[in-house]
Image 1 (spheres, rainbow, N blue to C red):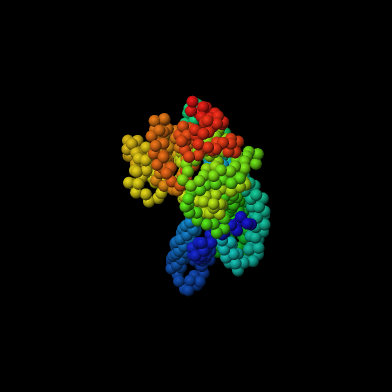
Image 2 (cartoon, rainbow, N blue to C red):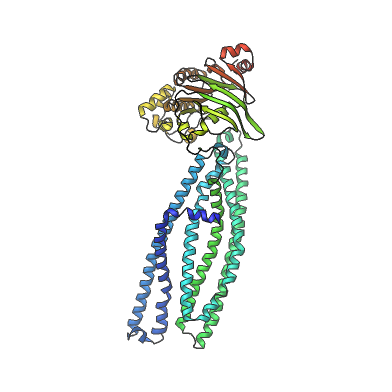
Amino acid sequence: MNLYRRIIACYRPFTSGILLSLTLLALSISLNVLKPWPVKLVIDSVLGGQAEHFRGLGFGASLLVSVAALLVIYVAWGVLNTLGNYWFIEIGLRALLRLRTELYACLQSLPLRYHDSKKTGDSIYRVAYDSQAIQTFFNQGFATVVSSVLTLLVMFAVMFSVNVKLSLLSLTIVPLLLLTISAFAARIRRETARLKQEESDVLSRATEGLNTIRVVHAFAREDYEVSKFEEECRRSMNANRRLTRTSVVSTMSVGFVTACGMALLLYFGAQEVSASRLAVGDLWIFLSYLTMLYQPLEQLSYTAWSLEGAAAGAQRVFEVLDAGHDVRDVARAARLTVSDGRLEFRNVTFNYTPERPILRDLSLTVTPGQTVAIVGGTGAGKTTLLSLLTRFYDPADGQVLIDNQNIKTVTKHSLRNQISMVLQDTLLLNNTVAENIAYGRPGATMAQVTAAAQAAQAHDFIRQLPQGYNTEVGERGVRLSGGQRQRIAIARAFLRDSPILLLDEPTSALDLATEAALMMTLKHLMQRPTTLIVTHRLATIHDVDQIYVMADGRVVETGAGPELLAKGGLYAKLWQAYDH
């Protein structure tokens, strides 16, 4: 029930539209109930010779009145029904838009720890497909239930006023119909949930295979990827087959029960007419209403199954919205303003999983105006330091401070606004070169974008692109080389011009000549309160103010490059391994 309450809460902003839809629905149902009556009048009054019911009108006029009434009822019903359906669909679409946006915003705000544990394809499936459950609940659930219930109440009232015995007879199959519906409901929900998971796996497999297409081609593994994809599709097909089989059997069962009810009423109704206890027109009303009566009951059965299927999708959506958020802004978090740019890691411990510690009681300080390098072997925890400083993650123990402010006490937005970052994995958006450079500084002028590109040694190659700064870079920047992507990322950092600069392997994709030129410009970029640079290429940072050497999650050496080299410790070994 909690699930259904949450779904209902999604529609609270659209109360006025729902009331309008219900009004139109009630009017269309009233007209729907009147549909058989013009035919009854023709049967009893015109064909039966009881023209006095038409206030003395003759046969032709009576027939014309009946036909005109039938047309008016059907046209009015059609207009009201169309308007009502339009508004129901409109409200469902608005709720879908709202939920999808909320779901995507939630995914954007969830910490990286959540995304690290989930498949990208699964998250995409929840946004694109599972979210549609909210529309299903309203259009195929709420609207159908209200329409069916109102129709049943009105029809039962009219039927009982005509003939109590036949009305009670028509109700005899309702318990059997409800029993049939409930027998299939849980099974359909279970099989729908399984199908959605299999479809999510298909999307995840396709996303992974296409994102790594260069690796696939490089190792000639196309056939392997196709076979794995086919395997996922086969599991989805089997799940779909099971659900289809259940749906077909359930539909046949409901149809058989309703047919039994129709046959029962026709048999006893004909006997009533034969005994002159029921007019032929009244039997027509009963048969017409019975068709309309069982139709809402059938719709309720299909609605129950649709809701069970939609519940599986809605549950997956709310799982994301309820996901644990371990990197939240605290209540009344302050806005960070960097004055000096002093950074401190104080007794910091961090692990991605309990059995895999990354940082162990680590402490280091970056004084204002310093350019500090973090070096060490693979897996030493260098990039993790940058992730903690930007609050991509929070430490398990200890504190990270900027200007003596614990960054957990300030808003993430204000924290990240004070930081420019060049990531190890250069990520570009599927936009133009200019839009990618200006991404961290909305509203930047073209002159500012160009100046940043020139500072990052990117202007010359950008001018040679087909549309220059207006060239689309493709998804993840695939139309550019690794070095070009990295220079655009550095230009983005230049343009953002934040007081704290974090560089994670900023020259890893560059040749030596470009690296040398770029390091000259990076010295200008690093003339700010604080710069923290992580790299394996020690020659690029040998002359910085301070170097911290890490191993096994701890700082093992500290000092300037020449000093560390003279010590002959880990830094000297890394120098020889990477640079000589």
